[in-house]
Amino acid sequence: MQMALMVVAGLSVASVPLGRKILRSLAAIPKTPRTGIIFITLAISLFSWVHWGIGLVAGAFLAREMGRRIEKIDYPLLVACAYIGLAAGTFGIFAYEPQEVSRAGHALEPVAGILPLAQTALSSMALSGFFLGTAAILVWVGLICPAPKKATPPEAEILKRFEWEDRAEELAARSER
Image (cartoon, rainbow, N blue to C red; front, side, top):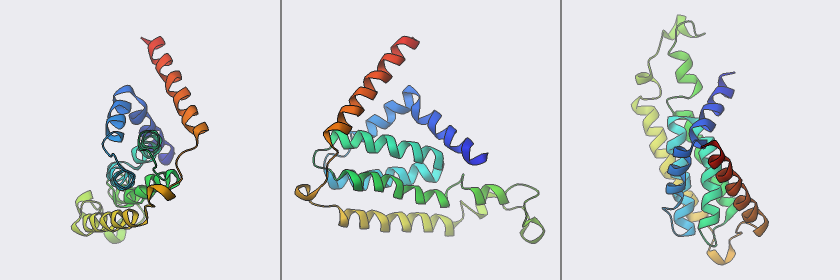
């Protein structure tokens, strides 16, 4: 149930008009394929660290937007990098383990006691793991990013579907007003 709630919370934040506007603004920042690949990995790592449900939904949305905006980007790699960033959620403040051991009655309480977030997700070791792991992944995805000539851009059918979905969303938003 908690996992479903996390995804619903992420979807609700990323799908409201303000959330969409912020994500579209973020998608407009990178201009080249390599910066797009690195940017989406970093952005989703940060979102996932805060709340993995937001990272999950924002990753799909940013990949879609950036696939439309950045010419000659390798779309399969872009989508993969959106989900690579989710790995940072394991170090995050809303990860299951830090949340579980910070409440009374957890299974390890007789041994470890109640552990506040300052000793789990916000500890120097967890933060170091997050920052070093994210930095290593950013270097790696930057290195494996193919040259624009070798990239697999999104197919025209997918781009048309994205445009159709955007028009449908705009019409729905207008009808709600």
